[in-house]
Image 1 (cartoon, rainbow, N blue to C red):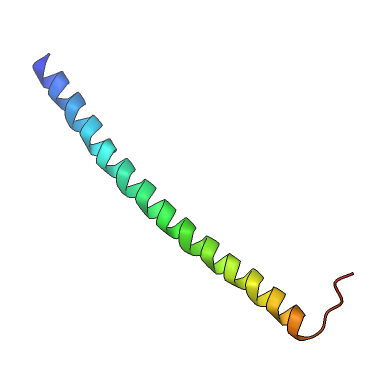
Image 2: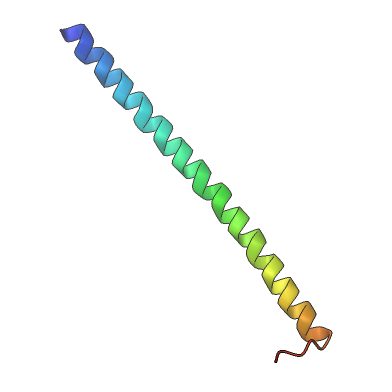
Length: 56
């Protein structure tokens, strides 16, 4: 029984650390992706302003 509890504790601890790593990595990639998309939108808007696009 003690061995099973030890395996359970090791298993839970390993996935806690893995989850933390995956979540941090995911949000870092998501933040960079969002920033790149926002910069594309700003570029397109400024380009339209400079070329005289009629916003009707």
